[in-house]
Length: 427
Image (cartoon, rainbow, N blue to C red):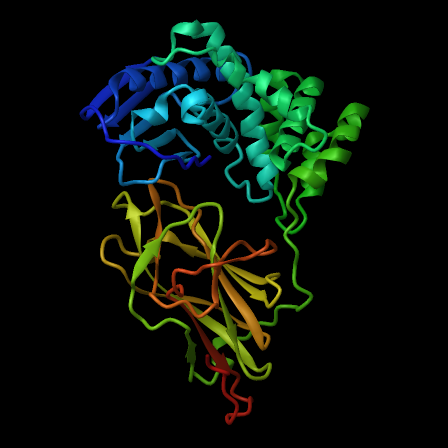
């Protein structure tokens, strides 16, 4: 969850704070509010475990920062960390003044942790599915936090029960609720069928299921066992289209070649000028670049990215993904690459060989690193945008990246039998 708001000067000094199963570090953060945030997280964690049976971390780590020069953000790492940055103490005042729901926000992020710790690969969830879940669970947790902590929790006192289910039900009374509201309503209806603790069972089943990203519904439906309860079948008939993202495949069939069949005269396609003007790590989406070649005899052999890894010195034991897509951003082929390919510290060009795969005359390369605040890749970009770089995930609506061109290049080669006079159409 992200919140962007205005504020004033930073307050306080760096300190550590603790509550039951919660540890926080505050940098220039108002102490009274840091303690209140710890108590909020502790109460919400207790409710998540006792009322819902969620698998929560033994200790939730919270990183608090107050910096007038930074954007204000609230997010999680999907495991055990929550990160909150504010610009001033004003951002922590009651919502009627600050327009920010901090108590709800902490509960919302704990809702995300409850899901993401169990469903590690949740790329099949729509935004309405993921955010609707955290909205519903977060609202429920706000109510439970009030029962535990009562009205004396927040340094700027107010009746924060209004931020819980009372607010969600008011939103759902609208004839046209938002997409996230629709998602929250579906999760609420599921809880009414399977009970609160039954929700944890659903998450575990879906987390263990072998889900096809191009058609997730069959595996999800089977794990839910909708046949055992007609109410589940009725719920699924409404929920599938709202909660589940089916990644469309291209009609272009991937054709591969052995490297021995290639001419070994690769050509590098690029839109960037080779000079990094900035770098970005973006969660929940990917870095993508459009390319074109002349004819249909070219094979993608490698993707080159200028970037660096951040986080712990030891790379995470996981892969990131590269997609070869058609001009409509539908997947032709996908390739996994290890995080260890990227160095920490100084950025450099990293060569990522892939299985040689035939490309159409117009194609898109998309790379997604699934970053968190503690691990990820900074992808570089230059200072001049040509209109060929954007953000998005295959099958989704792309968004133009106007800050420059991603320093992402495609290497292509031809078969030995191809016409040696043909060449890619360079930008």
